[in-house]
Image 1: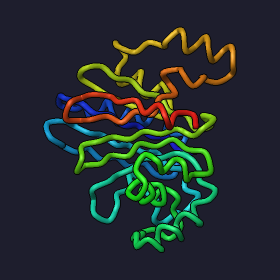
Image 2 (image 1 turned 90 degrees about the horizontal axis):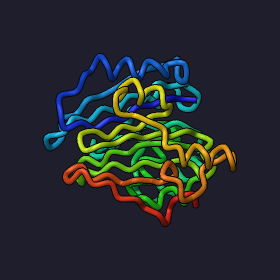
Image 3 (image 1 turned 90 degrees about the vertical axis):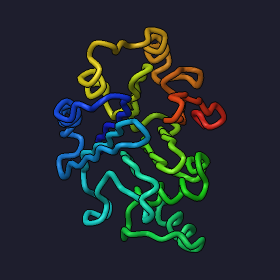
Image 4 (image 1 turned 180 degrees about the vertical axis):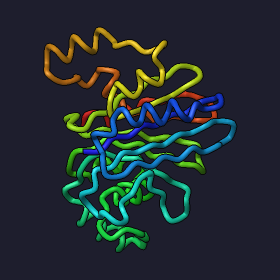
Length: 219
């Protein structure tokens, strides 16, 4: 189990508040904590991660970057078929820096298949990928929601995290639970396909638009 926090802001970021929000879920990943803050086309971008080191202990730290520094990822989960996918990607000339990291498999898989990478994954996951060149953010959660992913947005901010507590600490004045989603969860024990929390969004940083990719939601 790991925990992450991601945030985009049009304003100067409050680093102590972001670190405190990440520390609230430190128990999810007590072995290692790292974060990065990037300036990108007038936006501030925070990627923070608390890691429980299980797979590739020495080379699996996050946020993780690809060899070209174009893509970065924060991730929580376990991909059961990552060794097979790694071999497939290596056969397609993809370069890996890690020895056995499923995180890097997702990252290189996204480089090859784009949003369709989730169709190749067998496991449980939630992750955020930042594509610096195209100014895009891609978020995904596994089919049954085993690994949590919560997000918040308004016209100034977008944040995503492994737990609501991190988001509420970061946006305490603006957050509220959607009562329709809560009723659906109480009724079904999960969020049905049409529920907003199931949406896998691609965010266009340049225009602040959030585009929902309905054909890959709850596969």
